[in-house]
Image (tube, rainbow, N blue to C red; front, side, top):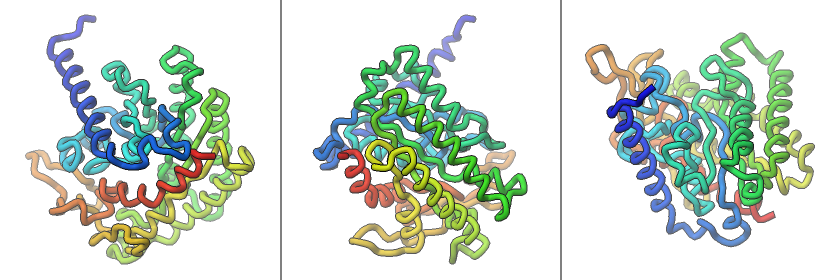
Amino acid sequence: MAISKLSLFSIYAIFLAFLLTAVQVSNAEKSSSDSGGGGGVGRYKKLFVFGDSYVDTGNLGKLGRDFARSWYYPYGITFPGKPSGRFSDGRVFTDFLAAFLGIRSPVPYKYRRAARSLLPHGMNFAVGGAGILDTDFHRHNLSAQITTFEQQVAQGVFPRSGLAVSLAFIFMSGNDFEDFAAHGGGVGTVGPFISKLMLNLKKGILRLRNLGVPKVLVTNMQPIGCTPERARAANYTDCDFAGNFAASLYAEALTAMISEVDPTNATVGVLNVFDPIKNAVNSEHAHGRKVFKHPRTPCCDRFYSDGYCGQIDKNGAYLFRLCENPEDHFYWDDVHLTQAGWAAVFEHLRDPIRRFLSQ
């Protein structure tokens, strides 16, 4: 089938927008003393990302505002100034991690053909809504993402010899637990459910290691009880105990599983995101790091209980409130962080990441 001129123009526009975004991400953090720095960080030239909306930089397609709000206003207002497929007002964790390594943010798999010049930096396979297992929202789970990566290796896009200088990063923020609760899961069955998650996560890690990826870094879970979605019931004054309890159980199981895979934690490690996020929402001032004026209330807040940031009515009127300064808020919407929030979290994680990469 012939491609129309309009379609060609659209593809070219997407490519230019993504390339500009990648350059801006790189330049924004280029002055960091950690980028490509000593202690083993600089040897990792490729970053392969797996996970959900916390690290997705554009893989969730433009499926309409109800399903892919990351492609609509006001997402992207801080960076790059328009929606870019990131679930934030600006940069997300992926961007900060890539800058720390001294490379550009890896190209989303969806745009691999339009941005081939970025392939030397790796690839992002994360998709908003994904889980370790299938979820109601999205079925491109962790196993499917790794399968896609394996296909890229088999096709020679990423030769095995080049994987020796790569880092695989897995960040799952809690979609599995949301799906578990939606299907009637409770305290009595959460243990077996977490065991199932660990089994599938372990299989994924071993597949990455068998490909020749020398380092695999996996996050524990954010304190899901502290998200605005959960904290709203207490008027944003406290976190939801059940959500954080589930995240704590997950963290314990993850640490035990990783120790089985690699007792030395030299090739497979756990990155603790739970504590820095919880400290931020509790406004704990540690070592001069940022304290947020609004740690629990979202910058972009919905009008209705079943609404969302970016929602509009049939006449195009906004059904959400937007804060004046995203820098004052840790959370951007009901579950995702602002760029300022991610920057604050990453400041706490620089040293742990450096230590892991230096082993």
